[in-house]
Image 1 (cartoon, one colour):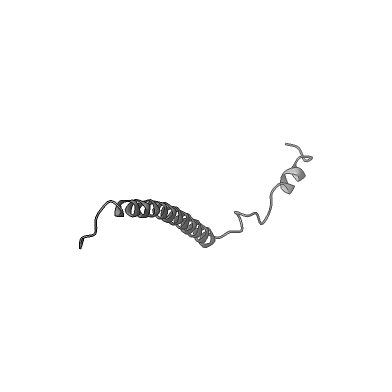
Image 2 (cartoon, one colour):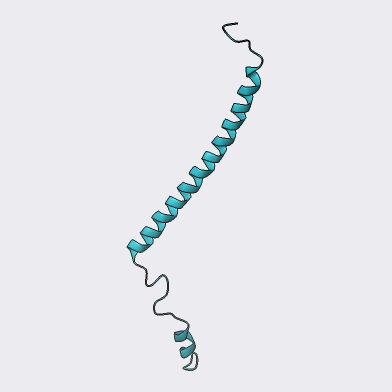
Length: 73
């Protein structure tokens, strides 16, 4: 490598790049936040699925109500 290529290499390195300026605690905070967001998303999906199943159950119960006579009849 000659002297003519050294300035190209030096200008390619950023002094305060994203990973170089971030401390360990900041990375841990970002990781915890990402875990929290993932858990929130999973919970929302579970609740959506549960709501759908409960709606189906409600419809089924309403359909079967008509087949049975009242107990005091």
